[in-house]
Image (tube, rainbow over all chains, first blue to last red; front, side, top):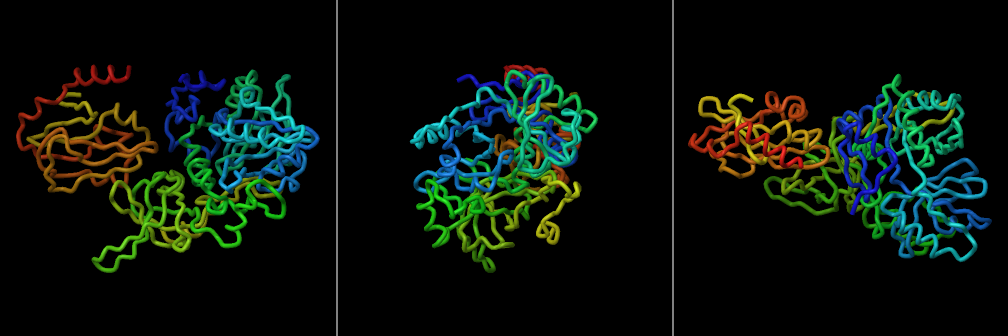
Length: 389
Length: 126
């Protein structure tokens, strides 16, 4: 099957990107170097084509109660112009998708993962017993993510307005030369930045304008490879790796996005986990030996004494890689709760050899999202990473 | 490059006084992307042609390195373990991986010369 192309496809080709098939889309894995791009995002700024992401518009007078009955977080906590991280569960409590919900005056925009667009669109329709309008806008919307400490300066040049009042997890609607954009202060890197939703017809205008203004701010085209390691550094989960339909939100360590003071599909099924506790959950770890932890690798607790080898299988790696910003191999794993204590010495089975690792607190890097009045250079590094290395 | 031999699995071999220096080619490192991890054999290990010498892992994939020659590993580039980026920066110089003392120099006849390797790569690209 031929890969789907975003409006930026030709730009990726011109920039000599290494293209990959990501959920049926031809996207840039890297332009020059995954590592250089991942560093650029934390050092200056990166621009990502994220047009593969899906957008489903939910509108109608009952839209609020409809969505509130499906998502795990509480939509009453956000108002018009704000967004919220959410999960959708099946009736058994497994995670169908994670998504961002944007609240408008008369509608909601749900931004879902590329591989789940059809599944979620169908899920919404199956559960639509009222007169809710559900529109899959994915094919008409392109998404750019501008991420990094220089993002605000670049965006201010592009829009010719001051953005000091523009807070994390909120959005604005703007128009430039008759071309509309929905811009949120958000992202998937842990850095300050913006996600820019535009009509696919206007997509190249925004690409060119952002790149032109970004030149003075060391803006770097960045691919999916950098996006993946940046989100791991920030402790953000990826659907399909760190959660799936067989996993409840507590096992995925996403209980913070579940509000049990409201009703939603899957709530009954996950109540028992809340009460009895889960068997395992997602933790972060840092390799002590040099080796790359990759998704699917087995995790062991090494209880060996002397020469007697005694390894206990405790779970599997869900995401991992080399972090150029920390110069460490890092990962996430879903492991048996009884052994998931901070600093627990674990081992990862990498192609039959066991390499030492240690459980640490996530995020691996300081999160630098923006709220007005905050100093822009705040960068907290978790103590566990500094004290022992 | 002068006196260099190549393999179809994209290793290069340079012979210096009966010793083969082995690394991976420019093409191989371009295919891999940023190299972040390298596993090398122990010095003193006997290796047989076509067996695995070690592993090179990039940000996106793990790839085995095979020895094109039979002999004894007499040196490995220890610096690479902490500086895997040398493979990207300088695959033919700083990025060398192992030195093998050959059991028999006639084995070299099986390797590709530069022209044959270039032709092989251009076919693989298309």
